[in-house]
Image 1: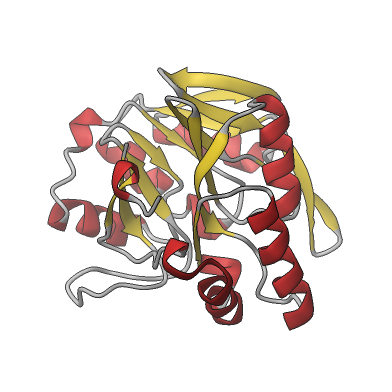
Image 2: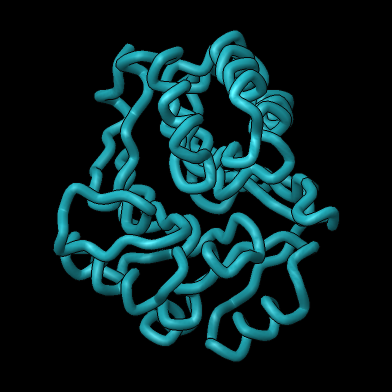
Length: 242
């Protein structure tokens, strides 16, 4: 499986736009999140030779501006695109998708959206003392899975545990995305990283709301198995450290 990082907080290429939020492209056809700004997203797509006509669907992890900010602009350039969102997303989000010309797909439980590509279904977390609906993307390859998260407001270990229940006996080749650890204490981050290691995760790619301190901790604990995620990176999961 190939993953293109279209939008992220970091980049080694000054020609690419960076900002808050993430957007990951899976095998040229499935987009996960749209970052904070649609013009910036399309700019990066153009520089990274992304053919928008090949997009089959966009999955939105959760209804926050830094993950949905580019969606309306994207839909203006690809009318009728399937948009996968949890039932718990806001009425304003649903109205925006329909007004922008997208085809909204709502559900509560995990579903397969393309061959060997799944959404986790709604995993409820908390943000600013209010419940929030969120989902992750799962890609199945042989007996391995890759898990991609937007912010993991429910807790990254809980998200992984929920997905392991859905895919019992599968190795997790890669866990990447926002782990939402920016406000956590250092000792708690160490414990979370060790717990994920004990869950058998082979490689991690923390970014976005994971925070600089957490990224450094994951680098220490996972070593070469901690992947530096940044805008413009092309990841081939078959070439990750074994």
